[in-house]
Length: 359
Ligand code: PMV
Image (cartoon, rainbow, N blue to C red):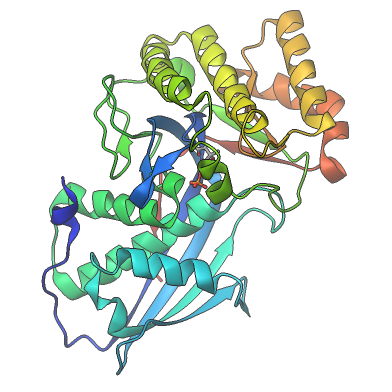
C-alpha cells in the first residue's frame, strides 16, 4: 500500500458523538531502529517482539464541534494532563491529511498504563499505537467497512507518525518495519513476520530489570538525530540488514545461539552508536554492566539460553525460552534483583498485539 491509499476521502458528517477504546502493548526490538529520514521513515529495517503485559489502555470520546481548530483534552490515570498535549498536537498535525475528521470533533482522551509510571519503560510505542487504533475505530464509525488488512495497516501507518517504533505494536508476535530483502516489509507500516516461527520461541519470556527508573537521558528524537553525519552510520545501517537476515533464519530454524548472538550484538551496537556520536552519551549504568556480566556467567555455567537486550536506556530486557522460566526467575531473585532500582522488575512475554475493548 502507498501513502495515497491511507487518505480518507469522504465520511459521514452526521455522526454527533461516540466512544472507542483500545489496549495496545509495548514492543522490544531485536534488530534496532536507530536513525530516520523525514516523515519518520527508518534508515534501516527493524524487528521486534510484541509484549503482552506492558500495555496502554486508551478511551477516546468524540463529540461534534464548531470551528476549525484541533480540540482535545488528555486525562492520564484519571487526572487531567497538560504535559502530553504538545506531543498529541504534533501527532494530529502530522496525520490530519489522512484523517480529515480531526478538526470536526472534540476528543476526550483518557489513557493509563499497566506498568508503573516512572518505571523507565517508554510508553510512546504503546501510547501512540493505542491512540492510532482509537482514531481508526472512529474512522470506521464515520466511514463504513474497510478491507481486512487496511485497518491494521493504517493504524500502524498512523502510529508510526506518532512514534516510529509504535508502528510495531499493533500486531504480534513478531513485527518487521522497514524495507529489506529478507522479509515482506514496508517503510510505512509494520508487517507481521511471515513464516512459521520455530516452537523454541513459543511464549518467549521478557523480564524487564529496572536499573534506572528516571527520565530518559536522551530522548529518542535527539537520539535519532545523532545518526545524521555519524561516522559509522552507513555501516550500521548495512549491518541491520545482515542481522535481520540472520535473525530470520534463526527464528525459522529454532537456532537460539544465533538469536542470542544477533540480539546482544544489536543492543551493544545501539549503545556503541550513542557512545561514538557527537555529542556522546553513555546510557548504561554500572548495574547494567553488572547484570550483563552475570547473565553471561549464568549462561556459561548452566547452558541456559537466556540473553539480554537494551533500549536507549539503562534497563535490561532479559529474554529466555519458556521452559527456563522457573530457573531464570530463581536466578533473577538471587543474583540480579540487588542491581535493580528498589529491587523492581516486570515479568512479561511475547504477545499477540492490540485489542479493542467493548464496554
Ligand atoms: O520510536 P522511537 O522514535 O522512540 O525510537 C525507538 C528506538 C529504540 O527503542 C531504541 C529501538 C527500537 O527499534 O525500538
